[in-house]
Image (cartoon, rainbow, N blue to C red):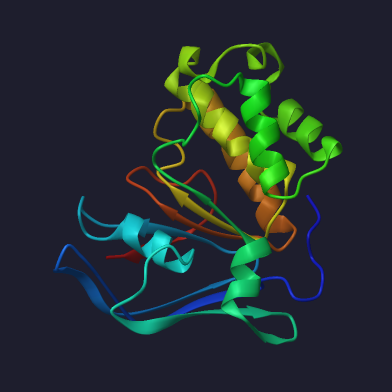
Length: 209
């Protein structure tokens, strides 16, 4: 899972960040940083803004105040550049088209994020997806759908993983496996910011909203 090349994300920061949804302030004055090789568990009550923060970092919603910054090994990065090829956002909903087969969906998502066939095969192996590939995604269990959704993180390696309740539908075996994949990602300089209710299966520190 090699991605360390010039111009890629090595540090994520938020400065005096404020986010509101539906006219209601979720949080304000938030400062944080995530460095290469680090996992941060984003915690807080339902409705505290965890998902909105992840979406704000990904550029899907605008902050009310403050800023999100990205830096590479040589200094600041343009946000558009960093977001276009430097991060994955895995939402609480898996975002899979129900009438596609697992194989079609994996290859569509992988192609969209720039993966080649070798990357797709690596994802299939790492997440044991081969028995699922001919099934329509609507026929998969919640845990199987999550494994399929996680596939693009392996197929097209990007430094920053923004994860929203990534372990929720997984059993103990697959939580352990995802923990191992996450540890490998961090070891190569990856960054993880994950909204969680359950502890991450890797060493992490907490950012509470």
